[in-house]
Image 1 (tube, rainbow, N blue to C red):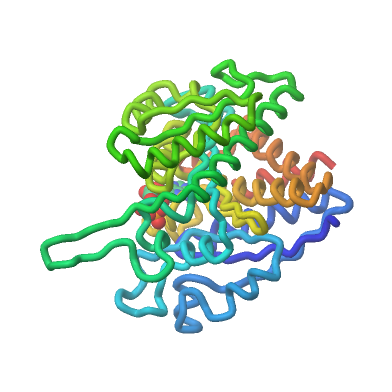
Image 2: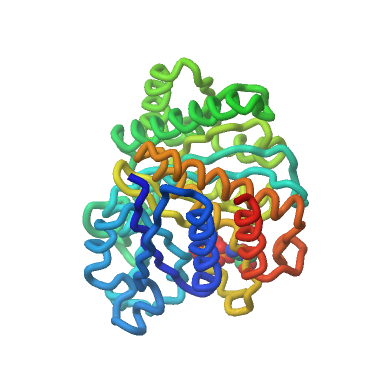
Length: 374
Ligand code: ATP
């Protein structure tokens, strides 16, 4: 097929600075990939959409997204949206739910020459995206959080067999693919295994909810004999993750635990600027960095675009896999290599990594590496 329509939703604060870098990198990858075509479709969202249309998620957005193959969503500064206006909602949980994007794939890996707390990290957190503790998405209607009296606040945690089964399957399939890729390139994982899934939970306390999650994941594990499996309590797991992150390969976890652990994992390899993510369902995928809209550094051209560029690269790789499209897979690999060279050979670093490169210069360095491969 080789021709894809990709939505571009800039988002807030640093979004309009970093998202265009990701689009430019994808565009440059197309230039060096015969047989691959990307058409970008701009769509307003967030504060800008609110100013111009009166809605943070303008009517018709979901219908237009459904006509695309995937999209890049910039960070949303929803905490600053007007309170008590039903048109000023946080759009991203709605989009994730509407398109049934149940898996949030968040890799953390050590990058060449980037000083961080740890070296040799190569892990990926597979976080359940649409249930768990998050009250803005775990109910069919209404909120999972409520106050029966002014002095009592309650929150509901939702774990389903279906949700647990499909996030576990996504994790085992990913671990198997990572193992196969390592074997093909003659590399091994720092922890010495071919492929392993670690199931993270707190079933000693959440006997029913975490119990259902772990039991379901272990049932799925039986269909993947080539992938090792272990399980960990989330509290001790957090300690080992902080001290020995090289021990982990693929981690499958419920929504809120996964949100917290993925920020921790980002911190181990250099910070939120290095934390990409892909939201995946059975039909659609959405590139979305782990970090927020970073209002404290917005408008200064200093934000690190790495996370959104890699998120877009993951989207391209996903499209390639889904459509068995060698050109898209290979273009995604080229972007990966270009980023690695820009970091290791050109020493490009934004301020969060102790450097002085601007957002634009980072994007340009990756593009120059991509173009020099032709
Ligand atoms: P959210 O809850 O929406 O995820 P947050 O509260 O986690 O947001 P962020 O907006 O992610 O907060 O910012 C946390 C810190 O990380 C800030 O100091 C911000 O400047 C920094 N940061 C986030 N993203 C980047 C980036 N791409 N480049 C450099 N620094 C970043």
